[in-house]
Figure 1 (cartoon, rainbow, N blue to C red):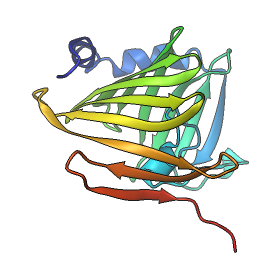
Figure 2: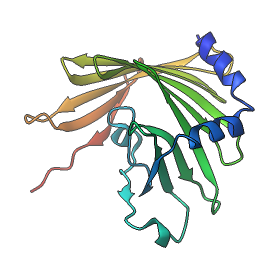
Figure 3: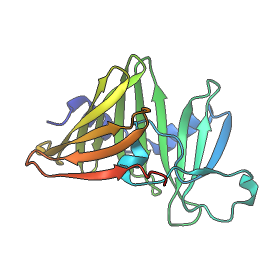
Length: 204
């Protein structure tokens, strides 16, 4: 079922965009600019979601369009605390705000209309992402990250609808090459169906 604490946080942040933005942007000491997303909190997020990692913008003063532009704001501890992602409407951005405690990172995502999209908790253990809890407009999700030593072997995903009822689960399974590099990711469902969603391209 949906995590009640996270659900309460989601409701509490619905009208807090401007308050949080002002608080966060007071702490931003530098920005980095990329075309599309570059940094990630979850392992292999680009491969799992079918995206390519963004590329740095060397001179942000020459940017002609804000579409797909990602601006990362860092605090004085070199941690990302704000991500602005350009949408299809020029000069409008989705905003993600990040908060850090010892073993928890919390993200709060608003769309370009300042509407709350989701709140996500990332739990870390021994420096590795251990668990993810997300509550959003269209339901919630829980991800458990399973390792063999320091190597991620699979992610168990549980999904819930807006009423908090079970909406199905799946597993992402990771395979590696002999040198330790990622080889493939397979998406597997309880009914036995599975499909490869990522495969490393090999040279000739």
